[in-house]
Length: 261
Ligand code: 6AU
Image 1 (cartoon, rainbow, N blue to C red):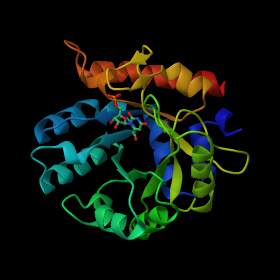
Image 2 (image 1 turned 90 degrees about the vertical axis):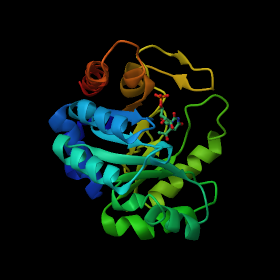
Image 3 (image 1 turned 45 degrees about the horizontal axis):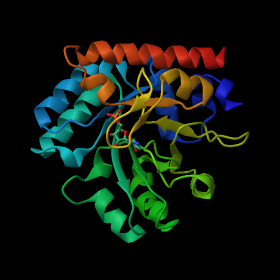
Image 4 (image 1 turned 135 degrees about the horizontal axis):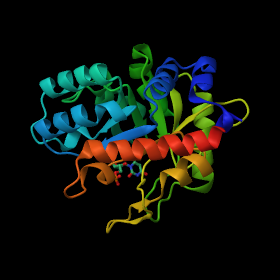
């Protein structure tokens, strides 16, 4: 049912503050595109975030690959998120016990919870990882995605493990608002957001197990909500990232319009 509703309709009905904000941005900017900015210097990350900002709803970072990380980078990313109206998703993939992830999420070098609207985790340690992250993130109105599936070849996140993600998300829906996965996981009662990586305009693989599917497949057929695109946007020889971002924005949005029609 949620598959046929507009992002705007779902925003109005949603209990999670972050989802209302996210769907609102998506409607306003007509984009369900997230940039996976796997860039390794501060200057290049800021440059691409500023150029591609107008076309995306979410900027996804791997902050620990930035060689010259400093607090100024984070301050400037937050400023860009306000300038262009996008959310920041630190793709940290937490995977430890509750007490440890609390320290990793709230403190350390990166202080992720202080600037990232969204982060994600594996449920391999059990429910405590969600409870630990929630203690830090919920008071700040942050949101968590669970890795219900992965895009890589041979992923073990399938079957009953995937189902367990959905069960825990329902139990912690005051903080968990959705999943990394390839399709919708919503049912009649629960409206979850799915963000899907491994997206390219042409399907195929890279040499290290990544598997790419098209925006049409992911959004229209599978009912996912947001496409995450990295190398499709920033690694095309001779083509500007903003030009490619607009191409992916349009492909993702057209697939969404087809789905809700
Ligand atoms: O488009 P790409 O392949 O250049 O980038 C895909 C991005 C990378 C991965 O770390 C991430 O998506 N990712 C994730 C996420 C978002 O959690 C899960 C997954 O199953 N596969 C995947 O590629 O930044």
